Structures are given as C-alpha cells and as structure tokens.
Image (cartoon, each protein chain N blue to C red):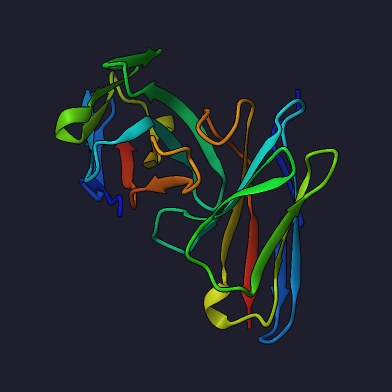
Length: 114
Length: 113
C-alpha cells in the first residue's frame, strides 16, 4: 500500500526566503506526482505535475523535482511572499492504471511572515 | 472556461440521514473522482468514474455510492450518515482519464450532527 509523507508538517519563514518542501513515497511504481496548494477550507489548486519519466518541472517561482528510485520529491519556492501562505499537498498515482486514485500526504502548512 | 463546480457548498445533516453531493467537471473532461478530506488530513480516494463507468473504488463502506451521467457530471451519495462522515468532499476531473492531471473543485463541506 502506497504511503506518502510530507516533511515538515508546518513551516513559518520571513518573506523573501527561498524554501524547500519535502515529499516521500514508499512505492516507486508511480505514474506521476502532483503538487497542490490548498487555502483554508477551500479546494485544491494544481501547481505542478511531474511524469515518472521526468526529473523536474518549473512554473514561475516554483520548481518541483522527482527522484522516483529513492521515492522523493521536493517543491522549491523562490522568493517567498505572504500570498504563498497555504497548505501544500503532494500526491502520487500508481502506474497500475490509476484505479486507486491519488494518494496524498498530510501536507505542509506554510506561513510566510510579512 | 469554468472550473470544476460542486453543489451544495455547505450541508448540515443529522445521523442516519442520506445526502447527495453533485459535481460538474471541466468542459470536455470525461473522468471524475471523489475524495473525502477530514480536518488535518490529506484527501482520501473514494471513487473514480471514466466514460460513465466506475474505474476505481477506495476503502469506503457500501454506504457510499456514486454515478456518472451522460453529460459526465457526477453524484456522490452517502446513506445512514455517521458523525465520522463530517468532512470536506472534493470532486476532481481530468481530461485524459484517471492518470492525467487532476483538477479539483471547491468542495462540499458536510457536517453531521
């Protein structure tokens, strides 16, 4: 059974800092990995999707990397802003057809101090 | 283009009642999935439908059921509600099937009293 762990559970940093969020998964047989952002009480916003054959993806100030063999992904946020404050969720989908849906971590709660 | 829409936004029910949640996918998306998110946890997979057929089911009791209509919208039904069913129910759609990028709706907040 796939398990996804996100470290740290919470993070508070001053505005302007670069930061790294970590995600690990136990079964390396994944089809893709997706990073999401969730604001309090809201739905999920897709940030980046990395296919299993890719090593990284970039969107603006965000960069996500994937090391499938070691079961790890990182989300790098450059020049953080107060608007980046949210919970960041990592999710994987298995390579066996997707019938098990996405498996999520518990998320990293990020606070950017003005 | 409109994103994934869900209705209602909030719902309050009592134990033992039944509830129906609705989801409209992004136009052109044929895959719809349902997730349950309890406070402080990541979403848990409930069901997936693709081309109107159930393609996957998570570890939820038979009180949970779903269906997808010819226009690709979907309903999630929960019978005999328990206090533990209180959660944010999220719907996601994707263009190319269950393994493609998932786009989520705003969710329905269900409170069971």
